[in-house]
Image 1 (cartoon, rainbow, N blue to C red):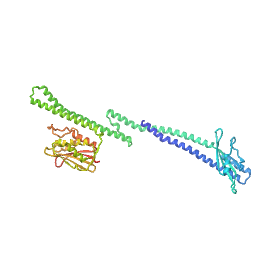
Image 2: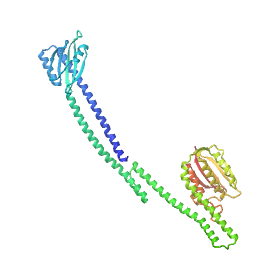
Image 3: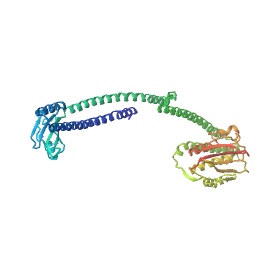
Length: 460
C-alpha cells in the first residue's frame, strides 16, 4: 500500500471514526436523558394531581387547575379512587385505547409509584403511564391514584432532528477529512517524490544535487543520509577504480616478464643451456608470483562477503595468541617472543581470521627484521580494548609512509628486492578483518628502533 493511501486512511480513522462513535453515544445519552426527564416530570405532575385532590377546594377550581397543567405539560391527567373508579379525566388524548390500568392497580396494591408504557396499534406513537398513590397521612391507607399519560412525540422529533443534524455534520466532517487528508498526503509525499526522482537521477547520471533539501523534518534527514551515501559511493567508486588500475599494473609486471622470457626461448633456439635454464626459472618464478598475487586478490575481495556471515566466539585472547604462534612458529626463520599472553583478557573473535591477521603481521615483521634478531608479540589491555602488538627491530617506517601502510598494494620494500617482496595486500587484509571485529589497526615507529604494527579488539 502506498504511503499516500496510508496517510489518508489514518487521517480518516482518526477524524471520522471517533465522530461516528461520539454521534452514537450522544444519541443514546440524549434518548436516555430525555426518557428520565420525561418520567421525572410525569411523577411531579402525578404528585401535583394527588395534592390537588387531597386539598380542600371546589371541584370546578380543581378541574381548572388540572386542565391548565395538562395543557401546559401536553399530558393527560386522570384520578382514580381506592376502588379504581375514574373520578377525573382531562381527556386530552382522544382515540387512545388505554386498556387495563396495570400501573394504577400496582399503585393501589403496593402504595408505591408505578409506571408502564404502551405503543399505539399503528406503532405511530409511544405513551408513558405514571401512577402516583395518594396516601392518607393519618391512616396510611391508599385513598386514590393520580395517573399521568404523556406521549413521546416531542422527544422523538427532537431525537430525529438531532440525528439529522449529526448525520449531516458527520458527512461534512468526513468530506472535510478526505479533502484535508488528500491535500496533506500530496504535500507530504511531494518531497518524497522529489527524493525518489533524485535517487533515480543519481542512479542514471551520478548527479547527487537532487538530494539537497532544506528543513528539519525526517525527510530532510533522509535526504542528508542519501547525500552521505552518495559521497561514500563516490569514494568507493574512486577507490575501486584505483584498485583495478593498481591491480592491472601489478599483474602486468610478471606477465611482461613471462612473455619476454617465452619469446626469447622461442626465437633463440641456439641459446646456451645455462641461459635457457635461467629464462625458464624466471618464467617459473614469475608464474608463482602471479599465482600468489591472484590468490591474495581473491582473498581480499572475498572478505566483504565472508566476514559478515561468520559467527564470533567468546575466547581468551592470550591463549588464542599463544596457540596461533605455537602453530605457525616453525614456518618462520626468526625467533618469536611472546609477552603478556597470560593476561585474562576475553573478547569475541573469529579465531581463523585472527590467525590470518597474526600470520600477515609476522610475515611483514620478518620481511623487515634482521636475520639474527627476534620479533616480539605483546598482548596488553586498555579500559575498553585488547591490544596486540607485533614489533620488529628493522629500519622502521619513513614518517610519510606510516599513514599508508594499510593501503592496498602499498609496500616499502626497495625496488631491487624481488624474491621476498611484499605485494602490499597483507596489511590491507589485516585492516579489513580487524574492522569486521569493530576494532582498529595502528602502525608506528618504536623509540628503541624498529616498527610496531598491531590492532585493538573491543573487550567482551
